[in-house]
Length: 353
Image 1 (tube, rainbow, N blue to C red):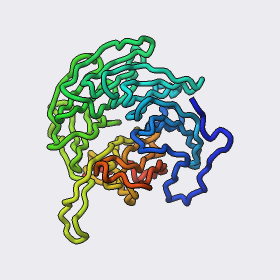
Image 2: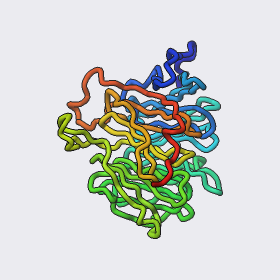
Image 3: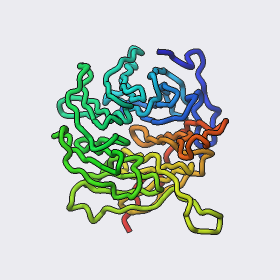
Image 4: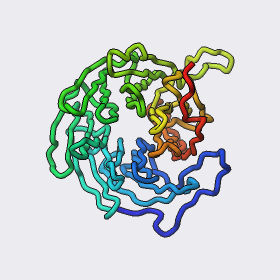
């Protein structure tokens, strides 16, 4: 357990109001996942350098490195408990670890037979539970006090992505399977569907602040699907293309296709972001079916995104995502963590047409 930036506060120079702020002291390898605390503006950052870093974000966007803890392999996922005093991470060392920010101690809290791809905190009426999704084709539930899981759910394939908006949990696996769980009955899938998208699933993300429960799916083929859980809402399902470019400036063919790497829903307005291997980020309104904002293209793929607890800060990572394989890992590839101050008109719903 090491603290970093203990002697000096690293403050980025005050940026003009419009400019996104770069966080100093970022990881030494690609950033895999981001999560803000539900209790304060603390940001957990998981990286392929085997570490999780915690930053405190001040009112003006200045950041301070607060703590760091490690895995014995790349970190693939991070989340917080409801109180915001514990960070949980999942890694390629087949383990999930919990870091207590009150005493700086970290301990292993979950074990799988293959890398832990996703960790999610579930706040149930009976208390908090940790869900871990792995490439060993299981989701396991842990109550953190016991070294054995409360329950293990067999998945049809390896877990690629998972999200929770209690009582909804959605798990996406290899071979385009999507399993939907009602967490009042967590051990059996409520329904299993094939992804509405033709290509491999990269991310699933549950709607926030929505009258009907559902989720967004992003694939490696520059496409996002909006999918409602219940049959009665299925007429509202749709998909759209994004994160594509024209081969030449005037071609208008959108033939260069990029992976959708992450989808983050705004905690208040229920709008959402998509980011991709093309280095772009867009904000969308699923109900008005319209794009709210496009960011200037970054100098590398956007690997992960997240909103803070009230949706005033949007964090995103510019990191190599291996979308071009080993040959794309060029020396000096940017590895940045950026903070964007959200304006109302970028994230608020538009009136339906």
